Length: 303
Image (cartoon, rainbow, N blue to C red; front, side, top):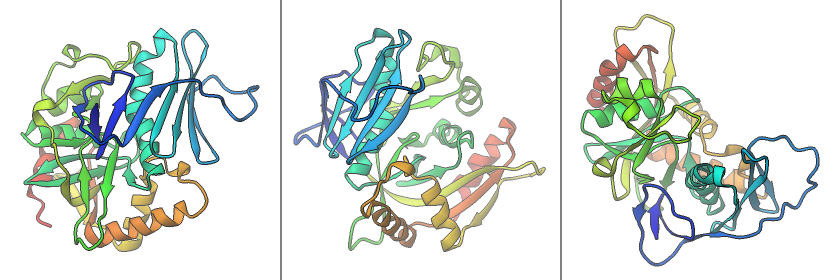
């Protein structure tokens, strides 16, 4: 049994670095046959995601060129049809990231492509395009003694009759490139395990610096690099329309939200979140030399 993103997960497949869960079970992960309900010919040999009648399929090919499939169904089940030995690490990462993210969508949870850390008992959230530095910024704050809430995938609770929104803890680890490990944590990245054998990205376990319960969200930062010469990062609060666009833009698996009112539900959740949480644009230089100033800016930010 495992716990992540506010869910208790029973799994036939051993997952990596997750917090132990308890009854009752919310999600079951099992092995089984997954039949694709569309023609099999003419598909590219790459990982892709496809929705069909509310079910979501994750498909990729192993090094042996055999098709591997994961089915995410009804917000309750993840069925894995992947037997290749070379796919073991891919399977675990697909389940713990994409699989659970899509399952949360099926459960109509609000999900952001974001990293978050704890500062003074609240969650500070970072969104931005790929390469914007979400994980690097979060790890730099962890290097200063703060705790991880989640890396890459954030499940947000927006309760009724409550003036605040809450960030659910994810998985107590981070995925970082070697230069980010050096710059943000001051550690030797080559002492950390690779996520995949043929990729340099490293896995940093944070069991001792991980939040175990939901935290109220203090604010959301939209991270951006600038070519301007800045003495310090620049903060600006986004007005409602601009903040709404950024939250929708950085929703996890946005193209998988689906028809039949789900997009309307997501938009309603976005507007409810904006009533509770301010959104700021945070611009800074791309150089790792600016990380100490970035951390200081976030720690000192008086909302």
